[in-house]
Length: 554
Image (cartoon, rainbow, N blue to C red; front, side, top):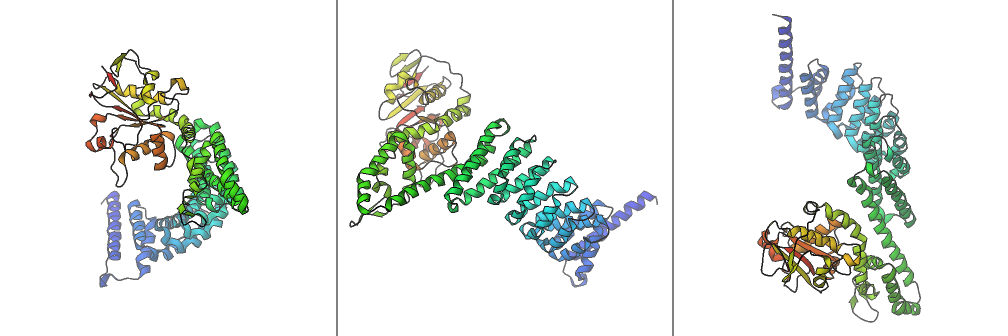
C-alpha cells in the first residue's frame, strides 16, 4: 500500500468517525447517551484537524449544539495552540447571541499575542451584538491594535453593539484619521449607528467628505445621515435652541457637499437632506406655537381687537410678502378641528376661527407653491424616458379647431388655456408626433417668461402614461397624479389631497394623458373631462384619431 493511499484512507476514516459522532449527537437513543463534555471535546479537537472538511464539519456541529458548547469553547480560548484559540473564537462568533457568556473571555482574547485570535475575537463580539456591551472598553483599546486587519473590524463590532457603545465615540472619532481607509470608512459608519450621541464627531465627518477614497466619503455621508436621522427621531423633544443649532450644522454639511457635488450622487445627498427638511418642518411648527401662545396671553380686549383687525391684516401682509407661510400655518392648525366659541355651542376649525383658512389657497399662495418647485420640475421632467427620447422636436403643420396652423406656438393655445376648464385633445395616427407635441406643450407650461407660457401663471406638468392602480376608497386618477407629482418635485412625502385638488382646479397642474386609446377600460373610465366632478381643469390627451380633437396631426 502506497503512502498516498494510506493518507487517503486515514482521511476517509476521520470523516466516518466524525459523521458517526454527529449522528450520535443528533439522536436520543439510550445507547447513544454520553456526557456533554465527551460529546463536545472531540469536536473541539477536530477544529484544528489537517483536513479542512473535518474542521468545517466540527465547527458546524458545535454551532448546532449551541449554548451547551460555549463553556468548552471558552476553555479552548485559553489553549496554548493559537490555531485552536482562533478557531474557537470563530465558532463563538457563529453562535451569535448564544455566546453571550463568552464576552469576558473574548474581551481577554483581544489582548492575545496572536493577531488572528484578536481578529476573530473582535468579529465574535460584534456578532454577539448588544449583549457584548461589557466588551466595549476592550474594543476601544483594540482600535490601537498594531495589526490593521484587527483595527478594520473593531468599528464594525462597535456599530453592531449600537448605542450601548456610545462611550466609544471619542476613539471612533480619532479613528477617522487612521491611515487605513477601511478603518476610516467603518469608523464613520459606526458613528452614524450611534445617532445623536455622535454629534461631537460631525466636524470630523465633514472633513472626511473630501477623502481621496470614494467609499470613505460614502461612509462619512452614512455617518452624518445616521446622526441627522437620530435628531429627526428626537425632534419633538429637542429645545428650540438645540434644534436651530442642529439645522445650522447640517446645512453646513449640505454646503460642503455642494463643493464636492461631483463626488456624490443624489441618493447620497438625500441621506442628509431628508432629515434636515423634517427638522425644519418641526422648527416652523414651533414658531407658530410661540406666536399662538403669545396671543392668548393678552387681555380680553386686546385679544378681540387682534382677532377682528390684526389677524386678517397679518394674513394679508403675508399674502403679499410670504404666501407660502399661509399654507404652512394652515397645515399646522389642521389638527385643531373642534374650537368652540364662548357662549355659542358651535365647533369650528381653528384655522377658520383665526381667518388663515380663508387665505391659504389664494391664487398667490398656489403660485408661490408652484414657483417653489418649478426649478425641480424643469430639471426632472426632461429626464423622463418619454420626454427625453423626444427632446428634438420638429415642427409640423397642424389643424387647430378646423384651421391649419403652419407651426403651432404657445400663443395659438392661449385662448384654450385661459378658459376656466381646458381640455386639449391631440388626435392623429400613431407615430405622427402627438406625444412630442404634448411634451412641447408641457415645456410652455413651465416657461420662465409669461409671453412664452400657455397662460399668465406657471403650471407643473404631470405625465400619465401607465395604467392606474385601483386602490380601495381612493381615486386612482388622483393617486396617479399625486405619485407623479411627488417624483417631479423631488419631495420625500406626497402632498395632501386637499392641496392637490386645489392645484388641479386652479390649473396650476397640467395633466398630460399619453396613449389614452391604448389604456384599459378602468383607466379610461377614470378620465372623464365631461363630468362636472372631474377634478382636472388643465388637461392634454393624446388618443388616436377621434371626432372631438382640438388639434389634428397628419
